[in-house]
Length: 494
Image 1 (tube, helix red, strand yellow):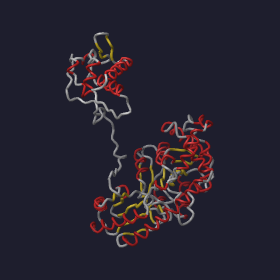
Image 2 (cartoon, helix red, strand yellow):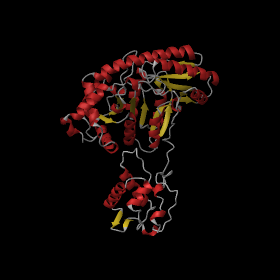
Image 3 (tube, helix red, strand yellow):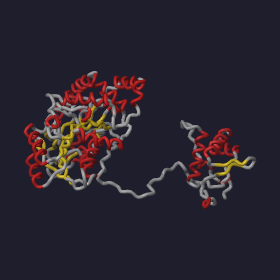
Image 4 (tube, one colour):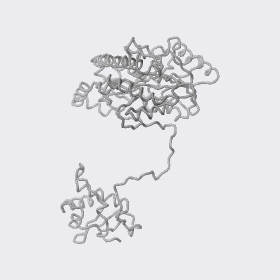
């Protein structure tokens, strides 16, 4: 057995005086760590408190307190006038040699167990530290309404009458919010629903995940647009569904192609973003909306309607969702609420017939049992008091100005290189490049000029070279600078 003076306590115990954890607990915790890893073994004698205090350069009473804690937890035994001895370690390793350069601060580089690694769920992570960055169209956090939301949250947290709701699970959630959200969706989207037709989640992506868990079985046929949102596609692939794509044009998805597919085999699900198609931003025409609902009824497939940016519209009233005209219960409508609010106040929602909603709550009870009834209370008040309407009106005015300014900049600086249409809503442009052969080269050159272009917004195949240019998070000065960088980068790309 190693003598206590041979043990490299300076390596076993590394103290951080800036930590919020007290010094004596740091000593105790790291000795426990050493015992668990068998660096200190059963029967091992520790240095005396005076000697240990000299080694660690701490007060003796600190070491005494650490030893008291270790004895209280059952890791060591104190023998009066003899010393402190380690308990609860494997006796067969009691003669283990302790290396001088060991470090308990290191965490394992790799798992000690095997597991399946998913290639389906892999996604591009752009961690560039550039000054400017593009995205696929998210709101500007600098415009988010924070003060009022925080004040309502604080007052609800202090309100004694709310405390009984803190323990409610997600199966019930906040009924007040669901009722107000139902009213909000009925007024803004032409729906005819009650609180019983809504499930609240943490995000839009969670909504899609839950729906796919309920609906899809291996080898089920899922129809998506030729260009579509990559995360739902990953979710469908993870369920081992068969995915078929259909073309899109200036009027949305091609319903003629959809009919041909339906006549040959039975689709289970059609996923689409009809209001502003992702990524091209086109709106599904009225004629195709009617035909799509008829096809769903005729061939009995589910329509998963993702309305990710319904709140952002500039030139006219937004087109009502397919769910507003669904009479047979084949449309599941998912979206997000509070997208213009601070991130912690955003939620996702599922709208569907009541029997399906009951099933979604079973899955939500596993994924997010506690929910966030307090935040939902705040959101309910923002709806009831009309705050959300006023805020969206104010924010849309700013986003419209940014959209128009970006359109002008693109015309002035990139007109010879691109084709685009000014979107009627949403926070992104769809830009198609003329004769540009390598978008990844453009990305690399732009990165050198302090502009990060995420790979996820780039689309290039034998038929198209395009990108989704999000502008919501950019002010006018940033838009001008970014378009200028793109122009400089293009001069080197061609």
